[in-house]
Amino acid sequence: EAGVVQSPRYKIIEKKQPVAFWCNPISGHNTLYWYRQNLGQGPELLIRYENEEAVDDSQLPKDRFSAERLKGVDSTLKIQPAELGDSAVYLCASSLDVRLGTEAFFGQGTRLTVV
Amino acid sequence: AQKITQTQPGMFVQEKEAVTLDCTYDTSDPSYGLFWYKQPSSGEMIFLIYQGSYDQQNATEGRYSLNFQKARKSANLVISASQLGDSAMYFCAMRENYGQNFVFGPGTRLSVLP
Image (cartoon, rainbow over all chains, first blue to last red; front, side):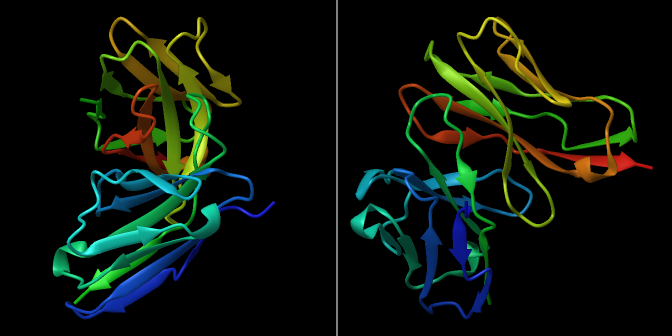
């Protein structure tokens, strides 16, 4: 069974440019997360989806970040315009449900560098 | 508010020896779960072990075990018989029954020496 797939793996853009990240979760996983991981730190939640509904986007900087999960499967995270401080690894994860003991499976992440 | 603390930025261990990675947490929710993830240099987070707040026994998964001390709010990961491939970042995470998100600590970098 395929794991969580993210693309691209690496992205270098100039500041003020737009960028988008794509995530394909594990088949059948209803819950999808986007996390941002700054260098040397733990991941921090940006947004969580239950099926196609964004149930927690309280940490998403909505002035420049947007996300969608069409048909409750794939998801896209967009930044427009990007700033130097957005340089980080963006991790997508999925889990079968939100029961306490259900682990999240992570993709390999997209490393974004804004220059 | 949730909080995960990992006080060891870096740890060294000799190959084949055991090592303990510390994790303390803070929550007011009586129902929660604790997770440990490994992140090698490739970047992917790999799930290692889970402990529920109501579990009576400490969790074990192969060479990984969790030393769960509920009253102290600590959930330390013990890796027995360390291998070179265990060198990685290790993250402790918590999920509250209320919040349902995974909240991660800052991580500990483990280096296994030959």
